[in-house]
Structure formats: structure tokens, C-alpha cells
Length: 553
Image (cartoon, rainbow, N blue to C red):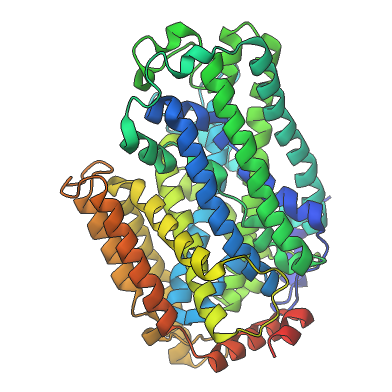
């Protein structure tokens, strides 16, 4: 049977809306399924090599940081249940220039995650002889590996074309499996092979505070915990968004953080003494390229190793599936905001944004070409994702000030304190990813301004009805923030190429001071209440979401 997407051009309309068919479990599992992906396959090994057993502290810090961001997102997600919501809140509060910026950060982080998960699948598959020709020695894809990667991306896009209801059922089934297998690994390793002495035999924190902080961004801890926003990206298709979005957002972080922390504990405890003979940074055992499965093999748990190798296909695959969905919804939201052509709003008969899916597929294929490995991508995607998240605390401050009487089905406690704190935390995570990551991210930001900014200027010149108000005055703090973060990173001590002119402690103080100054600066320069209400009204009417429209008055 042909896919719905094959008939899309003849049966679509840019003004059709998305169907509200996803319940609480679908939303919760969309976020949990995004959190439990390739991060659990690699995160524990990479974190312990970067920080030693003190990686446990890094996981706790990372979980608290993500929980802060999730709380802020939960309040705005319940207030504004719109497709691609994370990319749209800054647009509400600050207008076009800021909206373009954070919209691009959102799309960039989402569009490049699915290819990473595909590469993780191919990397773990190297255990089998038939897949050993898919990667070069430097972990880049061979021609046959590239072909397999393209086919996998096509499969994820194809499932999305059958509609959000099938997607929710498919993802829910996959997520039950994805949660069960890590729990099985935790249970078996804890009972059969656990040595408490491993936590102190080579020092609990051999690389000190800097090792712990660096592990948060660069080893995959934050990357592993990312994904709670998928429930918000799908809020335009939620049956009861005001009740379910906060529950799904916060609940997914609690589930994911608990699983990851326990995985780190049993990984350290189960390691044979010989594997750490040369220290944590030189951790080595047969099959370490597939850490948990390789460890199970070394410990004589062959049956568990086989289950884990199978899960190494299912877990990243499920995450890639839902991020493919999220990417199409973000591009849909960007188009609604007037940042991208209206064709991104075109939907199939099943109300799936088909052009956004096609763009997601093409982006994934391009990403397979220059990206060398899962590990080298983690810092980049972490920084792009946290930049995306950082826009929500800023929007929260403005919307709390300008719309104090707007209906808030969920209100976070101590919001005026937690919002600026979450922005500071986001900035620190970006800083800890290192200069070698941030300068590359800077190039990607410039590319986004060229693409989306050029389109917005074009629509204004042509006076098209979907053109957007740029609101330069409300964005005056943005270049100061981006350039300031770049300067501190270059002068700091994290990442290759950093100048080490800011000692540890002073660099954290500098990032904190910059973040707080920018937060209150942005809060002061946000759009007036009347302009925000008009924007919310227009978008709610365009999206045909009566609840959001009613609450905006």
C-alpha cells in the first residue's frame, strides 16, 4: 500500500490543522522515549572516563538542571498548547528576531538528533560480522553504512506519514521495551556482579571538580537527559494539553533521571578490576565500543549481552522516530510564526506535516556526511539543545510580567526565582561543553540567521500576509548574550583552544553574572502586553485552537 505521503501534494492544504488524538501516556512516552535513547548505551562509560565514580555527582547535577528547565517549560506548555511550542514561546515574548534565533536553535537540535541515533544503532551493530563494514576505523560511515543510514531515516519518516495516532501507539510500544531493558540490566548487574570497592579503588573523583563539570556536557549526561520537550512539541495534538503537558514533561524527567543514575551505579560496580588498571581515563575491556553489552559478555552474561545488542537497535531507533516527528512539528511552528515558507504547514489527509518530514529526512541524510561519531556530536547537540531550552525561561519572565492574569493550568512554585536560576544553569551547561564545540555552534547560528532571516526580510519586502514583525528593540540583549558566552568560553578553561585565562570558579561567576544581567535585561525589553496578546490571538486563530484563543483574552 502506498504511503500517505506519496499523495501529499494533491491532497494537502496549508491551512489544515493537526488532530488532537494524543493522550497522557502518548505524551509521557513521547518524552520518555526521547530521553531513553542512545544515551543509556554510551553515557555511563563516557561519564566515568571523564569524571571517575564522581560521575554520579555529574548525573545528579545534570538531572537537577534539566528538572529546573522542565518546570518552566511545563507552565508555558500548559498555557500555550501549540505545535512546536518550544520554538514559539520566545516569539510570543520578544517578536521576530528572538523568535527566529531560538526557533533555529530548536530546529537545529531536533533535526540533528535522529541522525545521531542512527549512527549509534550502526555503531552497536558492529558486534555482528555482517555490520562490521558499515564504519571506517575513524567511525565515519562507509558507502554501505551510509546506505543503511539513509534507509533507516526513510523508515522513521514513513512511520510518521501514517499519522500521529499510529505514531503514538508505535512509540508507546517501543518505549515500554526501552524502559524495561535498562531496568533488566540494572537488576541483573546489581545482583550478580557488584563490587563496592570500585568506587574508591582508583579515587572517587580523580579529575576533580573540573572533570565532574566537563562530564555534564561533553560525556553525554545532558544529551542523555534531553527529550522532555517532545510532549510540548506535540501539545498541538494533545487531547487534554492543560492537564497532560505538565504531567508528561515533569514525569519524563523523573523517570529518565532515575534510570540513568542507577545505570551509572551498576556500571561502575560491575566493572572487572583489570578494566581500570591504567586509571579511569584509560578504561578498557573487550567490547567496550558497545559498553553495556560488552561488559555483560566479559562477565559471562551472554544472554544479557544479546538482549542489549537487540536493544541497541530499538532504543536509538525509537528516539530517532520521535525526534523525526518533533522536527516536522518545529518547522510547522516556525512557518506559523512566519519564519519559514507556508509549505511547511502543508498536511496530508491524516493531518501530518509532510513537507516538514521531507525536510527532516533530507537534513538527516546530509548530517551523515560530515559527522564522524556519536561521541564527537554530543557536545554540539547538547549546546544547541540547551540554547533552545534557554529561550523559555526568558519568555517566562516576560509573560509573567505582561500577562499576569492569563490562565495558568499549572503554575511552578517560586517561579520568579526558578526562572532566572534555570537560565543561569542553561548557560553554564553551554559553557562546560567547551570552546571547540561553541565556535562550531556559532557557525551554525550564523547559517540559521542567513536562512530564516533572509526569508523574513523577503516576506516583508513582498508584504506577504505571513510576514513577521522583527521587533529589533526587544532583541537588543541577544547579541550581547551570544558574543558574551563566546568570549567567556574562549577565555575559559573548557575545550580545545580555550585560553585558560579564567580560573575555575571565576569562569562560573562570569557566566552567572552575564546570565542574570541578560535575564533581567530581556525581561525589561520584552514586547508590550498588547502586542503579546495580539500575537497569541493570531496564532491561536490560525492554529484553530479554541482553548488557547479563549484564554488569551
